[in-house]
Image (spheres, each protein chain N blue to C red):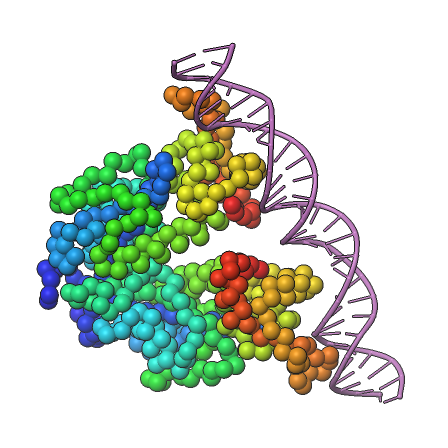
Length: 229
Length: 229
DNA sequence: TTGACATAGTGTATGTATGACACTATAAGT
DNA sequence: ACTTATAGTGTCATACATACACTATGTCAA
């Protein structure tokens, strides 16, 4: 050991709250535990950090290993350290949250054959450890951040209608928004590209499709404008 | 070891960005290192977490030990984990930031006789490790949070004038505010108690003193109002 | 082919918040 | 009493937020 220090070290893990959006609900991805403690209970995907990777890398690796998800939006959330949170021994966990497009990725059962499934964020089963607390924090963060950063697009397919965009905000913020005001506001921000294209295979008037123009967004941010919905 | 797991463990430390406010500047508290690496360089107060304390507790303990500060506002900031950030071995650090009232506490040299001193946040010396990055993050967080949470009061004495309050916002946000608009806004929030008392020993018209009414603030928050400056 | 249905798309009017702006009031010190 | 230093105060114009209801367009089925 290269320097004088003899404290015992807590184990260090990363856990990930993965959000997805379906037609009507915000979903959270959970893994069913096969081992004690909490065998059979649902839990957040996660695992131990390796010595040759950063926490971000560890979170991505675990996500890939346990759910098959790759290249998703991922951000650090909070580090939890309560003494008894793992009954086996002292574990400190760095929590992350991720946003994924439900269509893009089929969530695969983990390589080690554990069960993975999506649950509605407002109707979760009992979770292992203090994972319920972590999920609440992630939800709060998502709701807060959505107002002043355009992260919601990470949950939508690249092409979307304004109605769908509005639904996304309504689902996450848990309140209805006025259609005309929403459209006025979001179009005035001038960060959407009108694709001059409409939905296909719908049994009613088809909606125009838009794309989030990240280039334009960054430009505007640099010029000191601030997004807010 | 109570469960099967054979990964090596990174060392876990907490570091703390302590902010204070003097007449004209936002200050950061630093400790001068006496050991290699970075001997002689200034660094954030911090140290190793113990097995019987949470990260919050560790941050408070280190702050107390190294600077004599106790009972300050303290909040977790971010966990940094880059591979080479400590040249000796793998160290993961949970960064905190704290807000203290400069008048209240005389900062003492650390118990172990290291040097502690306040530096202007916009004119810091070269720091050890990646502490400059951590300080930038803390500053950003402070600026961001100040807009929608009344944390700035943690930097002011219990009784303060509106001018002083305005200065605090100007110093932290790094831009001038209009005096009349500021007063209109802050008084309309109705979270300050007019103490019916004025400054003493000033060579000009004395300013009324106010107090932040946290009770009233919490009440309003519950009733779903949102602070914003 | 036409009518029913489902959703897309659109504008105005009113209230509320924001931002720019300059002078008078009061206390201490000489 | 006058100088100095800071406290304290109001109006107007503009931008932004909110409330609100009807017409347009496409599919499908009778």
